[in-house]
Image 1 (cartoon, rainbow, N blue to C red):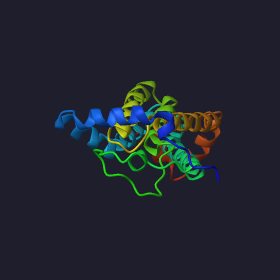
Image 2 (tube, rainbow, N blue to C red; image 1 turned 120 degrees about the vertical axis):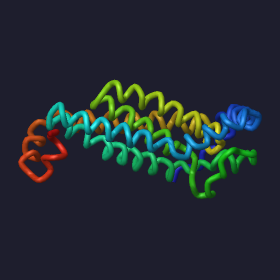
Image 3 (cartoon, one colour; image 1 turned 180 degrees about the vertical axis):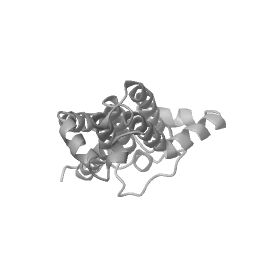
Image 4 (cartoon, one colour; image 1 turned 45 degrees about the vertical axis):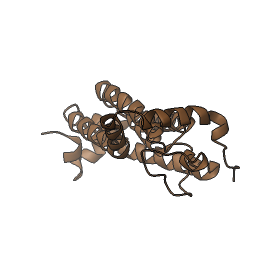
Length: 201
């Protein structure tokens, strides 16, 4: 096991500065950020669904690539979770004993890297292989998700930065490997009961 990372020594002052700013911000702003932090990942699911629906009208290979996106995101999440278990960084809301907008996660729910940031970044990068427009929206949403996790107090800035990098790299590697020759697989699948998933009406 890797010794636990000491988060406060990395960017503790930056974290406390952001949390203090959040405490003194308008209630409507804090409320919006809290909701986004908790439920914003649903936006990425919607973007993936839209990407798949549009890809069906392009062709079976495009649809197959779009269908791979959620699986790639799940794989990126799994990689990120393994890193979490190895590093075992204590949440900043416990290490620094600050008042945060969101309840502090359990003691064994480690902080580094951020799962939310990793999932968001993985979705954004994977969607790039489906639609650049959707990917652009996802990139903005991913940045907002990463910032929100610090704002509500559950992550250090370096947690979300590492999560973004881990998610993006995992998705990039996986998608490049998957899209090399999707045509052959797509042709085989269109001859099965999975055809409606790959070909639009």
